[in-house]
Amino acid sequence: MAKPYSRSDPRGRHDRSVSIAQVAEHAGVSVATVSRVLNSSEAVREHTRQHVMESVQVLGYRVNQLARSLRTDESRLLLALVPDIDNPFYAPIVHGFNAIVQEKGYSVLLCETGGDALRERRYLDLLYSRRADGAVCLDPDTVQKAMGGAAMHFPWVACCEYDESVAVPYVGIDNCTAAHDAVSYLVGQGHTRIAFVNSDTRFMYARERLKGYQDALQQVNIACRPDYCVQVQSLDFAAGRQAAASLLALDQRPTAVFAVSDTLAIGVMRGLYDAGLRVPDDMAVMGFDDIALAQQTWPALTTVAQPMRTLGEQAAWLLLKRLDDGTGTQGGVVLPHRLVIRESA
Image 1 (tube, rainbow, N blue to C red):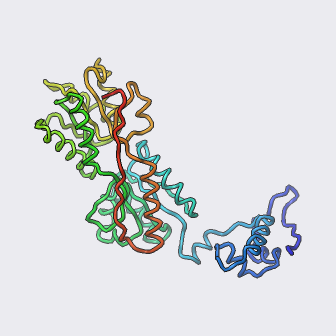
Image 2: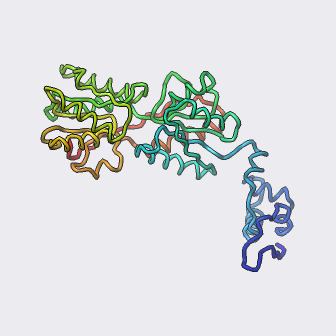
Image 3: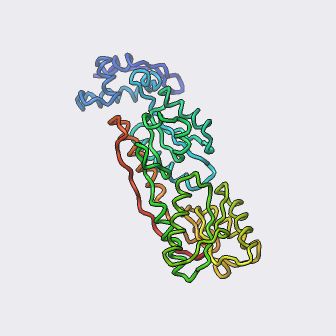
């Protein structure tokens, strides 16, 4: 039978210095039994487990996570390495990742890398020093530069951006096919002068979506015009407006624009609006990602939808499996995309 205990102050708050020995005394069991209960050991009867947890609640005992991590060599901390936290594409991915790993007792540290190898190396030092157990990375090219040949030997997984030649688990979509489908849709709408707004081709998605754009045009014998391919160095709205200005300066303007992100596409629409053009009557616009803002624009943005939250969830399961079995031999997971037809194209 549990013993009465009175370590609370006159205002009813529990003393935070309650020890595991005091929990054992209150529950009438050994310290070892309390430890097994707190570490979710199966070698404890359910009645005893409930009894101990009642004492934990009554006394207000809190597990010393730092001490536990020193004993188990686990920090219960995971890193989410994101190139740009201002980009609304990443938020649902991180939410999905966080939802899964929190259920397994992990916390997540959100790290903005800015595509900077030095900054990313500082975050990855947490893995080297075992202050973090693992990481999900949405910019693995930078990881490769930061860690060199040691990259594959650390517990991390790639999400969205990945390199199939590197033995690291990954989850993403088929960017080439997705872009091909988008351009084929525009061709089906009667467009033959289709511009492409792309970002930095050091990113895998940019290279693959460019290839999909080119393949779709080649399939229907439409020449890929260099002046219709505008490359910008960021994915923000301002870059999209600048791309629109470049296309409007051409002697023969395109009749449709396909951008590699919704933020760029929305910026393009604003640039067209500023020039007095109507979307889609004067120029159709299509994006990529299907961020929440895509259906709130006027006109609503036609786009390619990525399953953003599911990408994060799948990345979490891949990382948990890698942490569990200690290997990086799992293959990649390729999720489906879909066209979302709205008003802009």
